[in-house]
Image 1 (cartoon, rainbow, N blue to C red):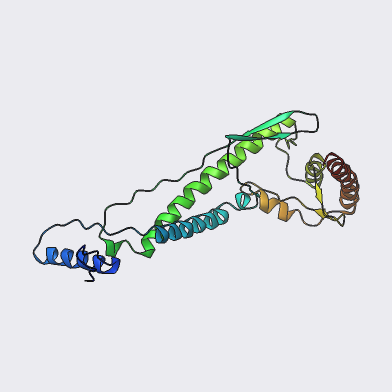
Image 2: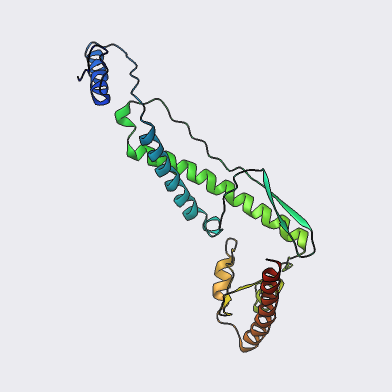
Length: 230
């Protein structure tokens, strides 16, 4: 125990040691004692940041499509909006994703790093499910509103169907003009069908080349308009 002057201010380590001694004495005498350990704000903040980074990384693993989306921080407001080429303002409401866990009162020695990781995994799983469901819902709403939908009408996957989808999309190109292929999100079983389709035919490659030429020109016009406006 470390004391300073008459005020008897205890050093944090000595304070913890004293409370542990009191708890040990209570256990020896079969008494139940609640011990309140001191709080260290910096240590708590550091641990919170570590926990958040762990959860974010795990969410990206559990829901890869969510992990591919770039994000930005909104410091105020409850929504954001995108102004389309036709002048229409498309508002995007903010969706709150959350996870909840229950931590039972346990002895401190039993609440170890493994227990913390287990609880963080529970939170990450809930967030991944919530965010994935919201993403799919939002994509369905946007594509339905814009009419940017290619319906296979129950037909088997084919090369032409795939090219129809690419033709309906807006594409991105690098500064060197090279195409940046989009990421395909396929439902159960569909990824296997796409892989089983094999290489594209000569006719398919010719059509794809024509599609990309048109999309590249569209991309250049958009970029030129953005520069003029800026």
